Length: 136
Image (tube, rainbow, N blue to C red; front, side, top):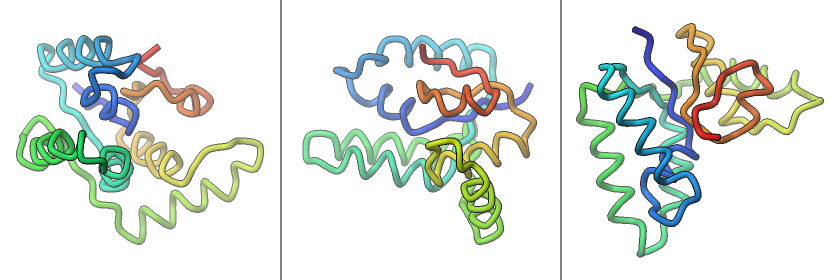
């Protein structure tokens, strides 16, 4: 089975009990864990997540979650290199009619490279790119 790409908003929802999607995110994660599906993310998604959770209140949660990503065999972690950055930036330049960020463009490139159809996110930019988003 193909992995599911995990975007920043899913990590935030999983880590913040006050997030509107917190309960739904844990439900989605449980379904995919039970189905033995792997999760995939990038170093840039991790950077966005850690930046969001940089305050004292959330820092411990961020460290625990990121260390879990690094150590778990349930996760595929893609370190964004120059080639992937360039591919994402090319997409970013072409999407003049969209408000997609560079991290989203790189995530979309990764998801397409893996032949994925589902994105663990609530970000509608991925729907615009023809993916099914799992947090609605």
